[in-house]
Amino acid sequence: MRARKVTGLPARGAVLLAALALTAAPGPAAAQATAAPAGAEAPPADAAPAPRPGLSESVAAIVNDEIISTYDLAQRMRLVIATSGVQPTEQNLPQFQREALIGLVDEHLQMHELRRVEKEQKMSLIADDQEVDEEIAAMGKENNLGFDQFKAQLAAQGIGIDTLRAQIRAQTSWSRWIRGRYGSRLRIGEDQIKAQLERISAAASKPQYQISEVFLDANRVGGMEVAVNGANQLVTQMQQGAPFQAVARQFSASATAASGGDVGWISSGEMAPEVEAAVAEMRPGQLSKPIPVRDGVYIIYLRDKRSGSDATVVNLKQAAVALAEGAPADQVEAATAKLNALRAQVTGCGDLEAKAAKVSGVVAGDLGEAEIKDLAPAFREAAQSLQAGQVSQPIRTSAGLHLLAVCGKRSGGQEAMSHDQIENRLYGQQLSMIARRYMRDLRNSATIETR
Image (tube, rainbow, N blue to C red; front, side, top):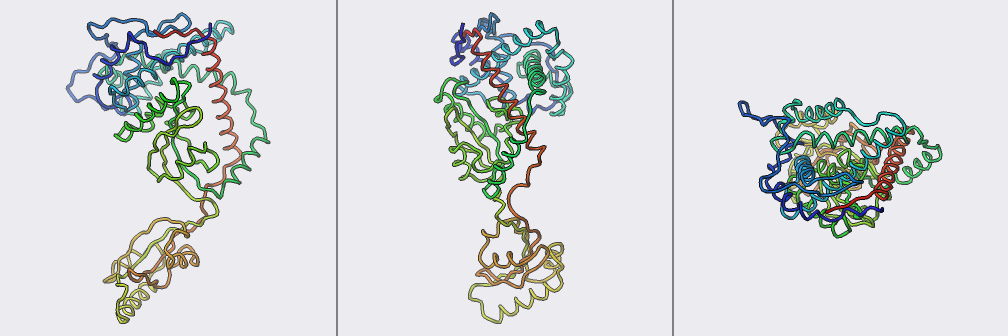
């Protein structure tokens, strides 16, 4: 029997989930938790929270004859809320419920497949309790919490530790199986590496962007309209303080979700045209609006931006005397003499500011890094002719007289990737593609019923 796609919400569990999510403690406690105040009585670390009084547990979904209860779903929703940093509202509850249900269905399919392989091939694939608890301990350590403290923080959010254990067990076991089964068979040919090197070289003169991404797969979440609405809600939450990395880990369907959405440096031509057009208009530190593409919606965070390799970038400092544009000649001559005397004492960028501080009327400062082509005409000529460590003659502008010191000079663009770096990137991309196809096949051959 073909799977029914998990696109809707289980009606019988919706009221329960709304009550549970809207009463969740504010803030991403599992991701950014702090220890309970001294003397406070922590809830029992191993106690799984009971369903709310008056609301009975029922069936949310059935995956290959295995039941996902509304309690399981409510617990996973709490975990998604706690670890994403997104505050639950009546508007985004359907998105939380959808992500929680999709995650549970996928994990049931993965564990079913792992148990089948274990039985057929007489091998151990599923992570044991010790491995799972070691992963949880590492998560707690990242938040400066011991294992028991971390469990107590989850319990304070109404999350049973077994909910997190189940998620980690599935993720760890599945990742190990994919790498074990396919990793040793993958071979990245020299022709592939050469082609990638040629593409990188061809794009070297184009602008490059350091980005992070969240990708909502329209097929996975129930259509483009659902994906766009969900992306709008996530953008609103991130603008209000939800951490991008946490949101990416919980909601993104991209392979980069595991690293918090980190794509790294990417050149023009390596992105979907819609994404590239949006990124080209963004400034570093800016979050994009939802960007619809053919099969889903992207949210992009532009972390940094740099010019192509045909640009020259300089790092500059200056010492200046303020002068009005129409200042009399004697003032200009006095300021020129003062800066020439300072220039004779300065050895370069290292002592420019210290020496200038001793001269009355001279103000010095760091101008930072810029492309030569973007500098004001008077500064551009000096920056082009000077070498790193050299100081210009006094330069007249409408604001005054300036000494310009070139602290560094380099070609724009990224450093060339090595042969091994390219091979590792291609290996990771192909392994991720295999894993996605594997999961697609499991879904297509499964019996999945939502209620």
